[in-house]
Image (cartoon, rainbow, N blue to C red; front, top):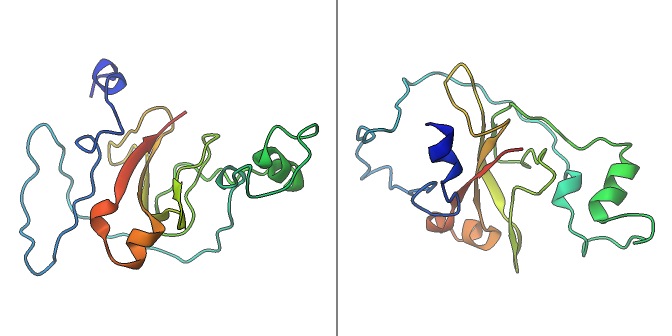
Length: 161
């Protein structure tokens, strides 16, 4: 899509990025309408890894810190981790913690806690995917909705530098 069109997108609009839950018993595979792209199926492999919270997952109310020494809780964590910010860009992820390498958290919080990441799709030149400048597409669901299986509350969010 041309940058001028991309720049005008309201990525918080459900029409731009939406998760549509489907009952696998009743779901019918349908071709995507134009101008959407469609890609052939390809085998993928997933490997379990240990993922820790990133400095951008921490909110100022999560930790006590000296505001004269740190600009926020993320600053305290960055210092403790010797500058390691968890940047694992250009990788696809399912579940686990999101790659939040953009200086802001990718998951929102509500009274139940941080949202659960369902899927993260990074830009992928081989597939022709691009989500802005080094961007990723995050599919998340509020923790309470996940706990009761309400996938209608899942959202997709584009993040880029």
